[in-house]
Image (cartoon, rainbow, N blue to C red; front, side):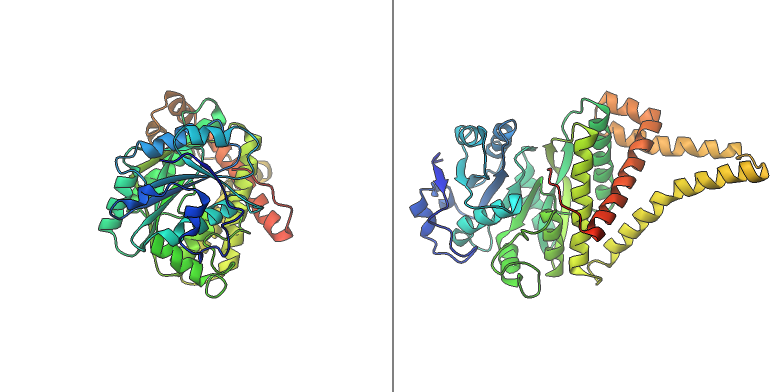
Amino acid sequence: MGLEEVSLNSIISSPIDRPAAAPYAAGLDLSGLDRPGPRIVSLIPAHNEEEGIVKTVRSQFAQTIQPALVIVMADNCTDDTVRLARAAGAQVVETVGNRAKKAGALNQGLALVMPLLDDGDYILAQDADGELGADFVKNALWVYGVKADLGGVSGCIVARTPTNFVERAQAIEYARGSRLMGRQGGKVHVLSGAASLFPVQVFRAIAEARGTTLPGTPGTVYLEDSLTEDYELTLAIRHLGFDCSSTKRCPVVTDVMPTIEALEIQRLRWYRGAMESLWLYGWNGITRRTWGGVAFTFFSSLLFPAALLALVLSWLLWGITPNPLYWFLLPIFMAENIVTAYRTKDQASIRTAVLFVPLWLYDNAMFIVYWRSLFGAVRREARVWIT
């Protein structure tokens, strides 16, 4: 595997349509593409990821079915990401003039490799702070073999071992999402940016549809104006008639936000980006169920405050005391949290679930962030980015 650092200054023309010989001139080692297909090219966008990039790259080379190329798209890095990624075995391409963050870095990477690939090949897009399970690629290809018309297979997110309550709450949250995905037969709301495997033919279809049946710049795959490029891409894939799936056999261990302040900023971006993407695509057969889920989330966020207000007013105005039988509902909610926390295999997370109240406060704090995201989108407040 070649370890040269490559510049895109002289090789980027249009995002997808570029002579296939151009990457050779750029100095990339393309010998990995000589293997029989399907070939997999891994793109890892990275901005100042020196703390995790080595583990991420090594998890790529540890795959039982290795990618033909592992390319780190170094995006305006000011730390040691480039050197460490190269030392770990990845080829490094530095973005040029990119102001669109991860989506822009991925588009530049796709512009580099798409002309070299066949429709039967795959793109593995992975965040720079995650570690793939050793059979991630193998199992993702298995999903493509058993399910028809798939446009993407998402990784199943597993939180890195938590060290405080905020991290433990997120670990339980991800475990809850994994359980829900399993009960729904692998159906997913979003093809996660943490790690997902895409067919090249689907990416080509998206690039051709941008600017006509899909929003965005013609010839590009990712919508660069989106706060949540992975969710918008999921909507685009579904609008072209493809399905999306995931499996617990494709774990990707990822960092979680260490503080409540960082978590708030991250979730404001996630929730607002999702709402803006839904507004962009409107109300139709693809988005109808998702709109219903959004409405239900807002409705459910008001249930407890409304119930609490009713109980207080009943007691103050009419002297009606709450029925003690209501307390027997508590173990039901506790049991669900405990079962979910057990799947994290973290004893501290299990103890957190047993206490119940901290997780209940966490869930309600996320409801508040959800409402703030709605107000921010409606009022078009300034966007703040955090991964």
